[in-house]
Image 1 (spheres, rainbow, N blue to C red):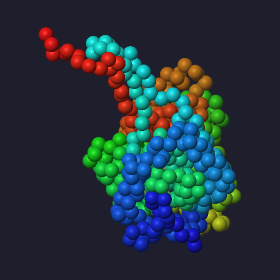
Image 2 (spheres, rainbow, N blue to C red):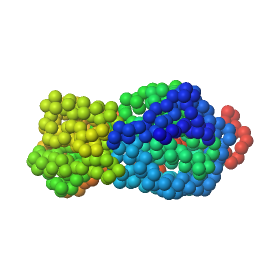
Image 3 (cartoon, rainbow, N blue to C red):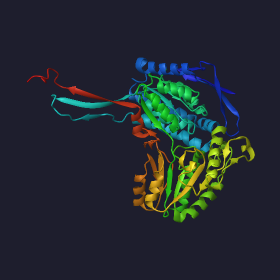
Length: 493
């Protein structure tokens, strides 16, 4: 069995308490690896190493932008060189189909390359100011925040890590990184590449273990200058409260219950296809999933009939064999989703398809679920209100455009949303009214390194990716210059 360690201050170490946890293949329930579990002392040692790296040795922070960019490109090349290995690690650790994991690796490579190029573009600005204080000039510069703690979810183990690591490192920060406990292998491999490429000692640190213990310490630790988290809204709220101890900068990408609005004039086959992508990609374990389908009443029957046909045709199996859907990340998460399904049935929703564990053939020992469609749903149902994070979608109907908008916004979340219609004016009109940070017209779920990603309302604070993703990990300093120093004479009358 593989044994893995923490990476602190440039060295691979065991946890201070000698504890370990296991990584389990969700496709068959078998143990893949034994992983060192960090304790409070380990987390504090990692933070101290990052602080020393940033404020004392300063090797990464003070490296010129060309050299820093070259290092990020070197890391990208190494990931690309080992792309098959990275994809396989995410498959056996998380359960997604191999082709989806391969796309994640490709995106991770390009994310590093994108930020390597972005740090060479202009930042800051010059400002014209009044002359009441003499001949003055004002300009701004962007500087790294300092020690950044980064906590990532399990649904995109490598890619979500890179979304945080690439821009924060590009900006010159030192990092303490914590991946989700159930999926750590590709992140460990990434830190091995950091070491191989020669990242300065203490600039990147990896701690693994229980989110409550490690996350609480990182959020409250006064030597952490910024904390970013992707995951549930409840945990995000806790991090926000604890980050107030030293008013550290925060970035949160949290839960979602996103609407996918289908108008009667939409291309039916196209709308169904994108609805499938919206909810069944990555087994529905996506924060931006289009988990609430709102369909115009006149096409409800035709739409649901075709959606159910397509959902029933989805192939399920060993994710290494590239089925349409792989395994849920863990047994406990599978059971959580099954509990939501039972709640939906109990509250009166019509189970149109799926709704049960899939145990055929070699899947018998894994954590597989059939794609599930609930019809005739109402806004007061638990499955309509709460994030399920699995291959479960609810269907509701609307009659008017206003009703569709009101239903779409009837949620405390605001991460994503989609509209399908052949009327361009209506598409733009409705998408503008949907209170969400990421939206699509006549498609659902594509994301791009160049465009910002993040939500409204209880779906988070800040943005990842794009120029905004780099700026999240920077502070803006204003510098004012007096070209003629001397006595101002302000108090003379």
